[in-house]
Each structure stands twice: as C-alpha cells, then as structure tokens.
Length: 199
Image (cartoon, rainbow, N blue to C red):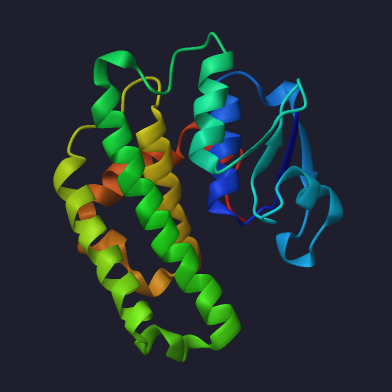
C-alpha cells in the first residue's frame, strides 16, 4: 500500500495512527508530499489534491481519513477500531472529532491565505463558535479513561485536540477544560500517538 501525506495534516495523522493500531504500518509506503504543489502522483491518487490518499494492494485509491480508517479496520484481524458493541457511540465520537478537526484546520488555512482578520468574517466566527461548542460537549462526554485498545472515535478526537493545541494554542482548551486535558494526556501517551506527533 502507499499513503500520500504530510507531517502536519491531522487527517493524515489519524490514518497513520490507525495503521499502527491495526498492525499495518509495515505494509504501507509513506509518500511525503506537499498537497498545495499539485503533486502529479497525489493528483492521480486523489484528483481533489487532498491528503491523506491511500492506494491499496489492489490498486484502489481511497480518500478521506475516516473512510480510509474504516477500510484499514476491515482488512486487519487486530482488535476492531469500530467495535460492533459500541458502533453508534464510536461513530458519534468520531463525528465530533472530525468536526473539531475540520473547524480548526479550516481556520488555519483561512488565516494562511487571508490573514488573521478572516477570523472576524461570518464564516470565521461560525468556525470559532463551533470549536467552543464541540469542546464543551467533549468535556461533558469524555469522563472515563480510554480502554486498553483505542477506538476510531477516540483517535479522531484526540488528534483533533492535539491539532488545536499545535496550531491554535490561543484557544487554550486545556486550561478551560481540565477534565478533557486529563483524557487527552492519556491518549497522546499511547505509542501510536507518540510515533506520529506533530512537528
């Protein structure tokens, strides 16, 4: 398999963690690239020019991090990341994590191209409100420590929180939500998170 990615994409990191958790890290070749440079190989794998993009052993190209994670979950016998017993709960949490990731990532990209004043636009304010609402909900829901094996919802949420701390430290969610900070600290101590830390 081949995975197109870069080091600062939260979406690519989610997939890398999934690969490690599913015991598939050794079966994939990492293709580091700049998605903004219209890399020809990346565009062949994903015409949208977005990362991550996975090319399977059969030559099928997959895009979108959660869909790639679902695929990886299905091809490995390791403990499932989307267990049947908690199917709805895991997808619920994955959705919150994905939405937080999207709001944070879009804020970073908007600032990169239009300056920080874009935060004062209608869309900028909407993203900011979404981030705060999701953080508040996560803080109310994530009260118990993670299990011995992490699920896809926990991975998506922890990556999103880590990305928020990495790219938008002014949000300062760790001080405002100490309970969520404790949960997050436990997650990022896991080997798969340590090996894929943002840099």
